[in-house]
Length: 136
Image (cartoon, rainbow, N blue to C red; front, side):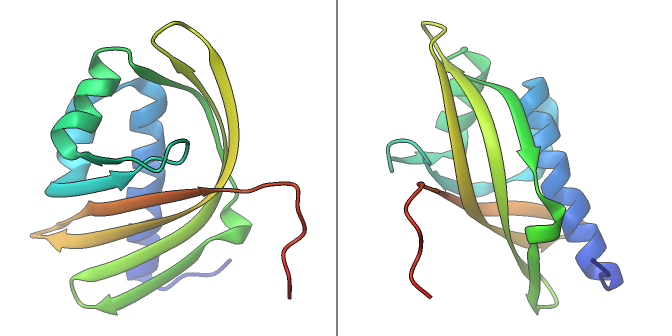
């Protein structure tokens, strides 16, 4: 997939998020997530704030053991000079505080805002992909 320069920067920011999640890299997450960040949990549909999300990762409530992305399925849209949306697909293996493994395939929407020189994630939502065929 060929991207314009701003799309490539957004794609790198999106991939950096997944790397930070896999590595449980709190410093990277603090840098990537906007202060007003909210995430809709792909498993439960619960809404979590930036602080709650980072605390869950730091505290081992959730660990991202594997995250596979599919660059061929990514759609990137720069809506305004400082607002971008990335829609993509993942296959993840997570573990909870008790060590139970959860595998989930999802489509996600990430909303980024340009903050100075960096794109920071403002909102994220994942939707599980089920085996049911989707209507066309």
